[in-house]
Every structure is written in structure tokens, then in C-alpha cells.
Length: 287
Image 1 (cartoon, helix red, strand yellow):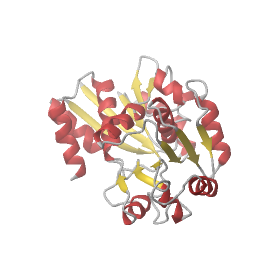
Image 2 (cartoon, one colour):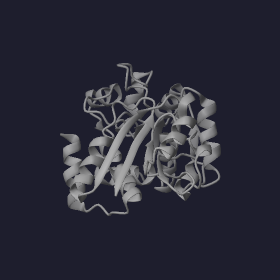
Image 3 (cartoon, one colour):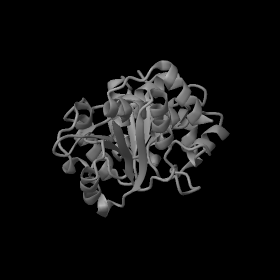
Image 4 (cartoon, one colour):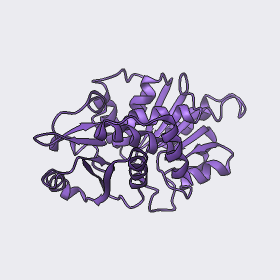
């Protein structure tokens, strides 16, 4: 059997998903192809229909389509329904069903990097499909407070409202950078005890094609204890670079990328990836 797969998004050129799935296929000895399918928003509906007509086994979904793809597919999994975002689709007799592997991928990446969320204050930059999965994960992992910073406060508020269906969002707030700075410093009795207590998660694609940081006020970095950018690129993004310059523990998105891809691979093929196989691919991904 040949597995015909791909990634739809805008942009997609930076993606390492073809490497991951080709490597996993080689380790499993199966026939698999994986294409990068640049898909502007206005072409999304046609692309989904074309993929079915062309016999695709399934596909991944990245920015900005993780929410808008939902009306174009059939049943969605509980995780996908909880966050109203889909990143993996599997062919059925009549179309595609949707799943969300970002949630499990993100959680496994936190464990892999020894990032403890329980009882911690967290900041999420962004309010798109990936941010939804992160916020939901942080809630279920027991974060103390979660602050969402987004260019559009309305979109951040909508994210919170959407998550009400699946979880308690009483500890989730939409704030501006200025508001978080004020709260962070007001709650700090000194730089030693108060500053550097937030876990920060960058969940946008804004820095992929720009040298400009999504963080407008550099002083915000003084509040961070850990910085995590879900973007998986070898060159540090401005967010990662500015964090490391300040001595903050900083992580890119390679582990999350791998673990969400592994889960998607298992959905498409029904084959379980071993720890040994996972290690081979993860090391190759970062080299």
C-alpha cells in the first residue's frame, strides 16, 4: 500500500515534516510520499476536495487553516473538538476526518525538555490554532495562570470563550504586553523573587519571514523563566535569540514538531513507532 500524504498551509516552505515522515517510512519499510502544498486561504476548500479526488491517504494542516478546515471535513476527534482546531486529517469513504496531535505533541515535548507547568504562571503569544492547543494543554497540566497576548484582543477572548466548552478557563486572561509588565513588576518584591517567574510560549508564525520579534517591549523578557517557541527552524528566531541573550532557558519547536508528526504517522498507517525509531528521527531532525 502507498501512503499519499501532504501538508497544507500558508506558508509551508520551512516545514521539516517531509523529512520526519520519509524517515519513519524508511524505518518501517513502507511506501510513503509527503508533499508540501502551499495553500492560500481562498484556495482551502478546493485543496481539500482535490486531495480527496487525488486519493490522498491524509494530510497535515498548519497555519492559518487549523480552524477553517473544520467545516470542510467530517467527524473530528475529542481533542480537536475541545480546542476547535485540526492539524491532521485521515481519509474516509466520503471525505476526511480530523484530529489534533498538537496537544499530545506539545505535552510530550515539555516532558522531553524537563519543563514543569503545574502551578506555574504561563504566557502564550498568539491566538490561532496552535495557541488553542497550547492553552488547552496548559490548563489540563495545571498551570496557575495563563495570559494570552495577541495583536487582536478579540481573537484572544474568542479563544478563551471557545475553550469554555471543554475546560475551566477562570485562570485564563487576555492581556496586552503593557498589562502583563505592570502585573509582573507589581507582584515582584524584588528582581530575585518576582522577576523571571513566567513560562513563555511563542505560538505564532510571525517571525518565520521577519527579523522583528513578536515581543514589542524587550523588558517583557525579564519576566520569563523559560521561553519556548513552537517554530521549528535551525536558525534561532528573534524570540529565541533575545531570550538566550538574557540567559533564559529557551527551546525551539523541533520536539513538538516530531511528537505531533509521530502521532499523525500512527493515525495514517496504524503502525506504532518505537522509542529507538523515535530517537533516530529526532536526532536527525536536529542535525
